[in-house]
Length: 321
Image (cartoon, rainbow, N blue to C red):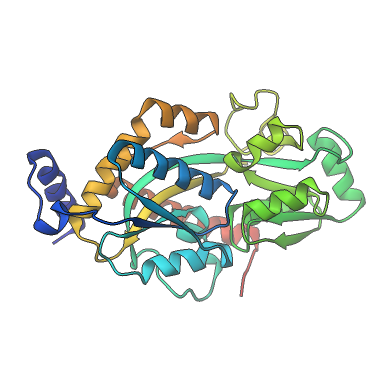
């Protein structure tokens, strides 16, 4: 049965109060929520916010399972190989769902085949950050430094959006930088604040608390316009790189073979959680553009993102393996 019809049936079942026996009793135990990054990063914080809201609304229990490494590939591979019984979901994002298929010559899983879209959570721009102790408070000062000496730029791992955007930025301004990959945003932030690396293109949820506390300086954002949370920080487009606009997306997926009725139920409840006033407000304050929508809309979004990032990978010259 085509996926779109299966999910329409699932949605109709939810509305009518009828569900197959398996879905009627689900969930009767905690759901493992795999997060392909360490605690403290943007993916982790969004997963925990969503899990907490679902628990509040439905009294469901989630076990957050942080599995960082290989640009998010390890966690997504674990999810793809999990039993498709509705008790494993994963928070995927741009790197492991859209970038890595073009960046790696071989992956242990196929993100278009081995996991099914459940719900698109949202998109968020990146912010170029440096340590509070770094000299200069402007992007122009950073570029001047980069032209005088070789800087290091950190990322959450090979193949992540921060890696790719960093490569494209250094090419655009004509400098050479050393890429330093980590196993997630949390460790990046520790070393960035401590001055062990020079700069990082961070997701806004991971960086904003450190910007607001004065531990990091924000020099530019990759959004098409300035952000309400950082109104004094210019966009890269207005800073001399027109069209330099990139965002990270986050979404929930399940192993292929997960019953359609359970995928439909998850989608409906995640959509309801994302539309709740407090979660929507909390995500908005972190710079997240909440998207929600159906599994089919998320599937179409993924197809478009993979095509877009395939072009970006080629243009950046970045490779992994």
